[in-house]
Length: 286
Image 1 (cartoon, helix red, strand yellow):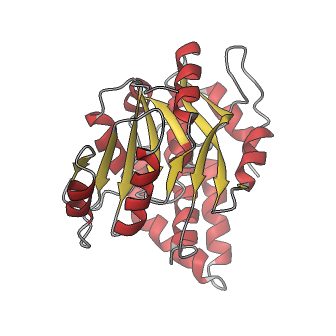
Image 2 (spheres, rainbow, N blue to C red):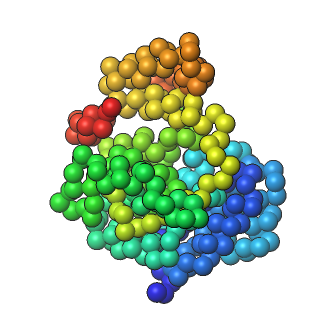
Image 3 (cartoon, rainbow, N blue to C red):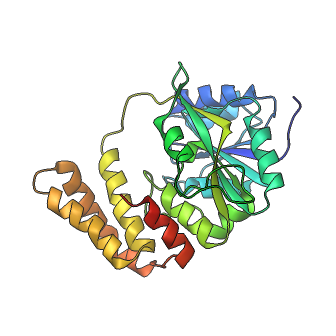
């Protein structure tokens, strides 16, 4: 394989210098030789300085505060390639995957984002999400390389830069944790497709287990996403579920309190999905 200039890799990081340096080493070994942009979300462990010293070809952007997932948008705006692949500081791409992704995006003009397959850890076990994406009830489109989906893992996605920016990128309101569904909704609402492409493969090697507070944040963001885009009865169902569990479940209580704190901003940004996209979302409701 030869270098492929079509795709930039955008990596967000916060205070995980050693993991990031390992990821950059993996990305540097890819035959595609993609340009890499690191968005340093206000690290205090010398991350930015280490990258600039050890990987001078990597572009480091430092917004000056921890933006969470919207830090990816800073990187996308800076990119100059038609496609952008996302990595976190504990993930990278298998050799050849970025070329396969770019070929698919070249062939399918309304494809806005590919949800890749995922291998986990040093053993490369398939992530359970792979089977869920492959079994999506949304079906295959006539001009899509795989099943339509309304979810993906952020560090295992390749997006068309134009589509990502048109959809607005990740919401600052959600910050980080379960932020992908809202972006998938907004891509579809703007006429872009989102599909699973298992032949494109990312590797996710998390360390340290689940971060404290992450489950509550994911439940909070599921409820906020409903208030931002779904019919009121759906949003109320999410809220009622948290409120019912809150007296006996600390995680649900934290999620509910955080959601209520952000609810006024969510209501100001509320925008109902087009009917066909809402119909797809209903097919995926539990």
